[in-house]
Length: 258
Image (tube, rainbow, N blue to C red; front, side, top):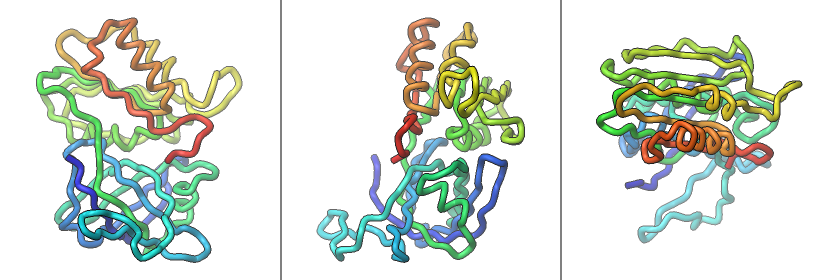
């Protein structure tokens, strides 16, 4: 059950992890209240200044309800994966895709130590069945932080097959796991001649024509329509149980990520 709460966080460091990914380390204030979701793909909403030099403010709680009872303006916010969380120190790592425009990407590009943002308690979707003997992770670059954390927290008794779409070889990351790992990088993210859109996640899914034997689980993250098409391939073409597939739309082509 989700427990609503809000926090200030101060930037400890920020910089490019790869050409297309910015890593931000945050110190969360009053982190003893923060309630992790127990999902390895958990995300928080980062809240930014409403502009005009105004500081970030948080909703307040009154009579069991949350709102802006002080009249402060709403702050633009965007969801991002918690790449790492240390509950003992309150340090959080968030990786953001670096791209032109967008509230969060612009903020991350210019973030400096000491900057303050807001965030909320996290939510998550990744939840493999207890009997899963293998796991397939299929994602574009926006889901890469989730994949990285999932792999780090995965037990060694599981076989995991991973397909990640990034813009270029320089955007590949060193991902580690105790599980038996098969990792394939696809350098097809972004608009280019001969492509039918900014992501080929659906085509990558269609290139998978066989799944391992035994009970499994499929987790898909990326552009919403592409993720849905990938889910349909595994469900309809390969006949995989739809209740063992989670497809998360991280963004929608042509729309701001809200």
